[in-house]
Image (cartoon, rainbow, N blue to C red; front, side, top):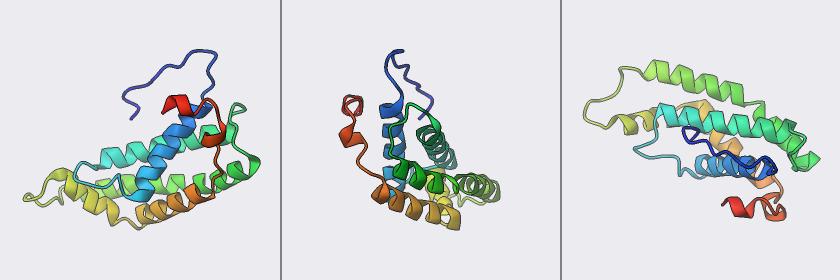
Length: 147
């Protein structure tokens, strides 16, 4: 997450690591790998926030090398981000104090997050987005070294 921020040399552009961050988080959400007993409201917010920041950079930055078609697709996806952020925050407020004491807090968090219609829509839209984006990382020499 952003708790550890890497500083890249001045001559290295941010396209590859930004795209990598976006795709890693998008894949985790779309595939359900983000689920589990460690997935909390905090992590849901972090995943969404980092995807939003990286996506905005990939769309707006002159250093971004996404195709115009990919940028259009990503802009459409990014339009849903404010609603996802608001749903996560509202869901967290609603869930406060509703956890069953017999279950671990993380698992209760995940069950409540997964029940949010906006989160389910976000997961589906993320999977669709990943299938629509071109193969920018495979064609970018700066992407592979960042893995």
